[in-house]
Length: 276
Ligand SMILES: O=C[C@H](O)[C@@H](O)CC(=O)C(=O)O
Ligand SMILES: [Zn+2]
Image 1 (cartoon, protein in one colour):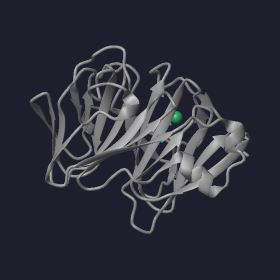
Image 2: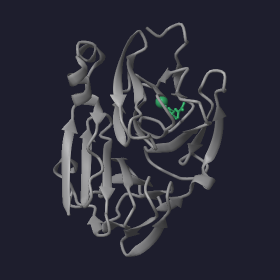
Image 3: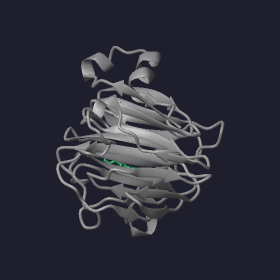
Image 4: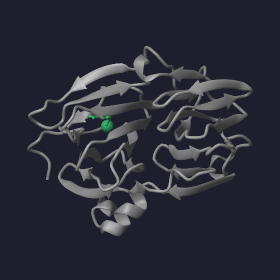
């Protein structure tokens, strides 16, 4: 097995506004998460959120420390959520096995030492942020998530937000994570848009057909840019940026935040007339 990482520095909005397509993709797009037999990380300087992928492909993958965490074990000072976007798999935490079904997420508290991923068709999307306390490891199924029904068919944004982590169900230090899926024909996510300077965010788009893409919108509300995103690609949303998108077809996405509070509702709405 291999463990690899790259680092993304935090970009300010003035610099981002000068970037061309290639530069925007280099700084914000993550297109190399899922490779068989590998754990791939993108370590960001946005709230030190690390975004990764682990594809066991029939073998076993060990969560290894990477240089940027500066610790003996990856989770010595961090918490983790592993979301399975593939077929059923297993995650073992210090000898205890958790059966993680398709679309289940496993929260792993700070201090877990031996973390192993396995499963032939399993595909784990990983999110990790610095932690200050050790909360219990917990398996979260989609059926356990708090549901928010949003949007309408008329505005092509009818969707269900599944809050896998919310204050009543799962205790975390920084991570707030969920999944959003769409009613047939609806393609717009997070429109009307919002920003939340308290928390950075990352989106993983998946369930896209091979020729489909999502036009992901980012930038300050009056200075927007787009990134064309294919299946199973993630994008970093800086704290100053909107994060929204429209697909050329159906898709699902996982959103994840880290930062100064864990209040999902604490966001500034951007009026439809404010976007430029
Ligand atoms: O801060 C919250 C996140 O941006 C997402 O939860 C938004 C979302 O899933 C949606 O509107 O479809
Ligand atoms: Zn958001």
